Image (cartoon, rainbow, N blue to C red; front, side):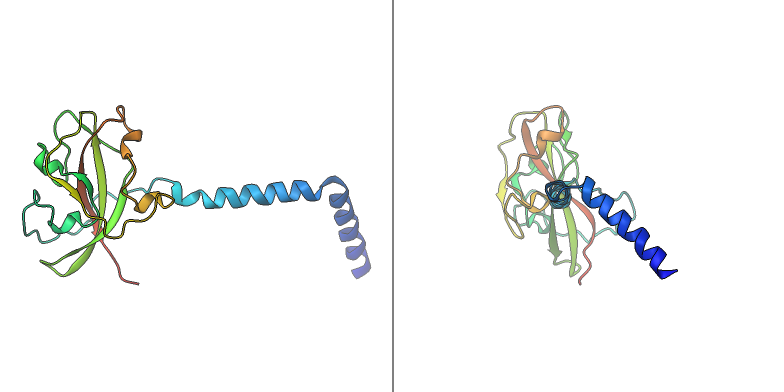
Length: 171
């Protein structure tokens, strides 16, 4: 019985070796590796609802406001919007960069989604550049040096929001 299985497997292996080349195998392996490295470039889905509300202290028009620990741009709260919403006449970008900020009011760390608001010319008020946790552009989900308005109808940047996504869990 064992010799029958051995002969069958040998025939299959020889047939596969005659039809497949080493270059073809390397090409397939290379495609898988390139595809796997592209996974961090995909947009991050944000959960709706169920987010605990953080204790809010301080002014959302101040660059030192706790949510703005990784922001880079003009604050929407100074441009007719808020820390969570875009001003009228602008569109929130569907892709974002994220950061983890410490809220001193309740002592918890929160995951913050920084969304650019697009469609009008640059606001020009309350410029903040706080780069805590900023990563190089090859980690786009954690960098604030990209114009995130490329996912909207207009690529014109106006201002940035800081939306609380959820509580950050320590590992």
